[in-house]
Image (cartoon, rainbow, N blue to C red; front, side, top):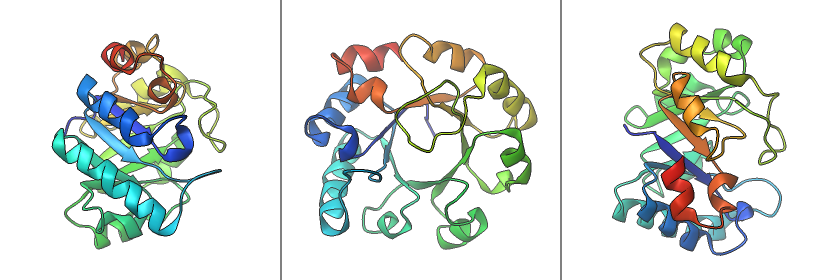
Length: 201
């Protein structure tokens, strides 16, 4: 499971066609992709499914792991490799029961959440916000690199993906702190040169 360069995107994050952005990012070397079609301006219903299928096809062609964000109704129609759930989504044990063979990621944004989550049921953790971010309206307060170190010490066997405010300039510091990968939205969707951005992450 290669989570080193984990790209998260939905049409609401894009100022041009999502498929074009994903194709460029795929060619540049992203290793995992999460379809997160939610929030202001996002697609719903059939339109969401149609875009999801097109995006899924691009990931398949490039052998990129494809996740959906907490949208359990999309897992099977899109034949997702996995699903990522947050603290306020369906409980992890229920998700694991529904999808025993899929990869399941769990968001944890502080020590209290980590202590109260059944982390042993998750295949990887999305940890953050590491730095301050503007990509998510509901992002928790930044936890910094020290927490990534601490989380890795507590759960050495669980892959950790740092998320939140990660850019080309600070990505290596997150990996150095013990994360197995970095997850980004705007570092790719808003990049002037996507190929360069992915390379530098």
